[in-house]
Length: 461
Image (cartoon, helix red, strand yellow):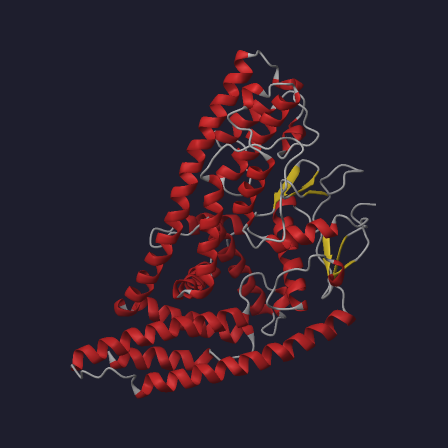
């Protein structure tokens, strides 16, 4: 056991303070390969993943229950349409939360809903989130046609509607929904609770040890994919087929980006963190320290049990690790401060240039943001902003209120974005939004500076 402790400590020391991303992640890969080859250490990883999976299971149980309730509501709405002999082609799609209007006049919302339920239409996000949008559109059209009495099971008061969405957005959210002009509907009591549980999960990821192991295992998985000449889609399919660990769709995307990040690091060992999608050096440095602590404790505890020392205090090695970790945290803070100033100077001198894909949208079509559905649409495609990602929602609302091509300065956003990274956080939020919409809409439509962002006018003249 002493050899194991020495082994992980030696590997940890070789890379943890590396300043160039490539050298850090090469060392981390060796470290994780060693950890995953030792049953005693692998058991620590598996224990943390079991805690993680239990958190995900709580969310999934609520998701399953919400889908059941929404489908029950769907059947009631379809029964109203059938009994009243309503032609769904008469439904307005001008304010639709879903892209049914882009499928042509031959496909109505009910047909589109059936295609979605069968998996023939793919929309990112939870199934319940998208199903709720279909039901809202259907109910809003029925209400507009005068079927208020038939919808009484779903109509709630404006106060109840506000409380319903406060549960979805969070009590501390800057967004407060007072009501909806198209109708105050509630189709599932469980649906808002799932959002609450997701916030609990995301908070736990940041402060619990399992969050650190999750990041490191995702990188370890990415390392197994780096030597394979596969597209991002094939990488994600491989990840989702993994039988050792339960990876979500988001995990698969992160791992695919990690593969691309590492390949870029091989081309440029000193690559700027702003060009990275997932393998952010300082985030991984911090998470690695957390995971290493847990692994070291496990080996120390086991060693003390083997020798029956009876000692309840910390070992000298563990105390040294505490002091070393504290020193690293101070050094990391100073390095982040220096990095911020370097980024600020670079932002004043450079503009980001993104590689544009083929223009697929029709002439005259422009991107639009709907704050009610939290969606950015362009032509026949949509990008759904997660209800839990508040900063992107606030940024979109402010950005799309500007004329296309005009810069939105960070200080113009009111209320301001909530970020622990100060003004630099604005840049990272903008980059994250650009990355997500690029995947969903097949175009990088935003130009992101250190303290400003705009929709590229050259794409939408």
